[in-house]
Image (cartoon, rainbow, N blue to C red; front, side, top):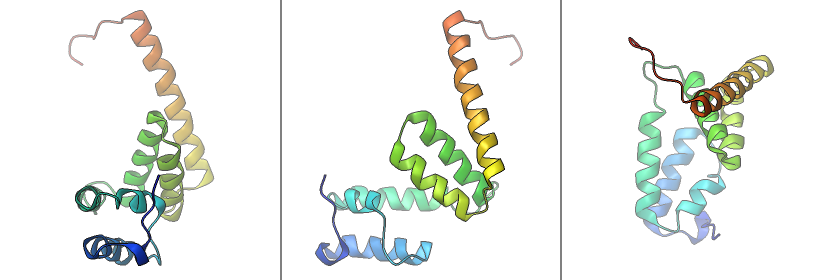
Length: 126
């Protein structure tokens, strides 16, 4: 997989990289963005969507990161799990919170599989 570094990036990619760095207060973008830079329209669209979804709203930033972490782990994306674990920790996730998140994720995976295997009908009123 090709990674596009800032020095080698086209102007439209540099503009997105600059926005990511300014928004996140980092010196460089991570490899996910460098990989997406092989197709500048996808890079820009993905960044704009992510920036909007992860912006302050009804859910606080830590909750959003923990949800992203749980979804990433459930999807089996090692890169996203690592990235959003680090982001959640940076926003205040403690070891205890991480442990409980993993416990809930594991329990949901188990009970989801049981309900699907048993073909449990959905209760009226749910």
